[in-house]
Image (tube, rainbow, N blue to C red; front, side, top):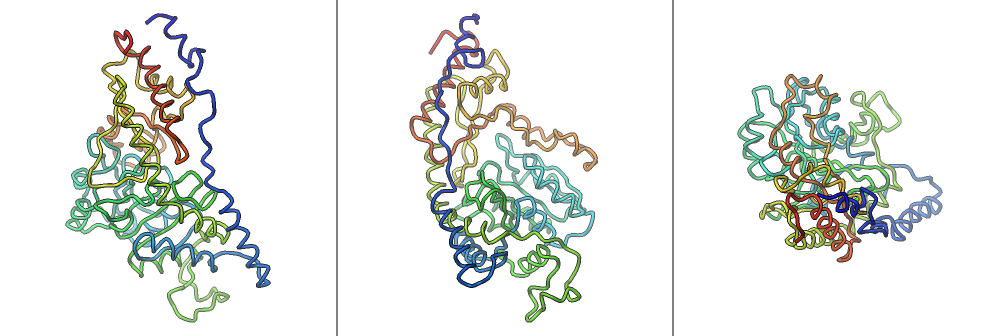
Length: 410
């Protein structure tokens, strides 16, 4: 590899493939502004300032239940809180073990710890980030009470077989759907398989309520009323005629985790667009995969044909045996060309130093680490066009010319 070859790359001072900024998502547009204005107008018309758990939350949570195909939903202030409430609502034995995914957000792991439970890592299935049924089974012990499993990147977990393992072991399942709104497994929405589910609705998610937010969803009415109480200072919502202004009748200590009416109005508006967003994101991901057939080192990851994704990011595989640099260096070079890339996904729990004190043995989860070490994530949104897809692949091909062993061109 000559210095002249390297100088062509943007990471070494060369011209970028993409100089124009990639398309702004603009999820919160005029429709969402109108939704917020309706909240203000409703308050003015009724001489009442808006707060929480009002008509807009009722409309929003009802619409989300319809989207899911039934059930019960409470809107809360964040996705991390949603996981915490979902776990807490199951009333698990204090200190019992809860299996967690090897690749997930710190908020999910922290929710388990702060609920007074002991996290235990399961590995992913080979060649993916998601836990598989065999990996879940291997992590179960007599002390296991539940598992919180994340549908990572919008790819649905193999939930039918997961539930078979859980039922045999008599453990509860919390589905963390924070990155997978509307994803399907065998035609059924994620979040409808387990005992209870949590969704993040922060601004970057496929469905969002504003800067931050979350949903707790379940088909179990008792779990729903428990969540409602835990999310609002222990109020006995399931008891008819209870007095909101009489704290002596509240059930237990609990904090206020409610989502406000403005956020719920925004969520109601963006929810109406979610199916279209999912379809568009899948189309873009498919177009990227098709275009990758012309590349030498990067290829699409294998897909579960029984599931339908709601892509949060798009993971692609690198044939590291063909590179004369590391995968991370290769991916950073692609990013320097003006492409949104996460070169080295840092959400592998076993690599977090602060987790060591919460795990008896910090298992390395080799499948999850191996898959991360062979992949990088392309970040995109539903406003990408064929031009953006072309630029992504052009950037990859440009970097391949320099960093492929014995490369002499295409």
